[in-house]
Length: 137
Image 1 (cartoon, helix red, strand yellow):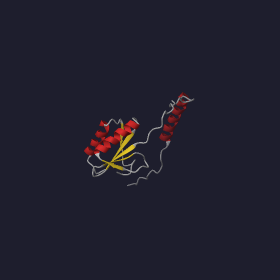
Image 2 (image 1 turned 180 degrees about the vertical axis):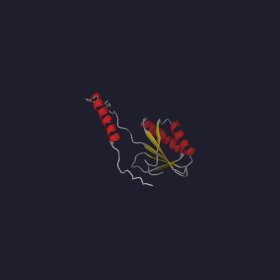
Image 3 (image 1 turned 90 degrees about the vertical axis):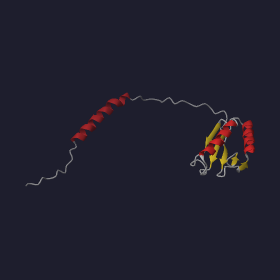
Image 4 (image 1 turned 135 degrees about the vertical axis):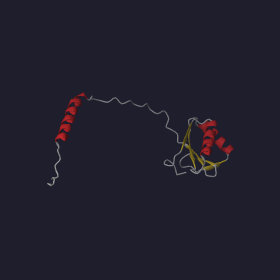
């Protein structure tokens, strides 16, 4: 029996055909592409700079503390003091933003309870802090 000799060449003719077809397609469509300036919408001037968010921290023992600015120290508050703090902050700036940073071991319902208390106080701008954006609470 005669052994077959393996063919060690690649037939490139089909690849060349495909490349020529693509070249023709690009040559036909290139002039159809619209050239010129792109109309980009402009944004109006910001009337007031955005305020820094007040951080409401909920610790593992379910105690509340607030930090009014990034450089301020955390201040532990009772529930009544917390409601007063929210009222004072909203009286000073009705557009104040709040950020809830909760300990990761807390039940989700505890975080929702704090979120609901903040909304009942009249806060309209409140967010939840994630681990990537915070200090890993």
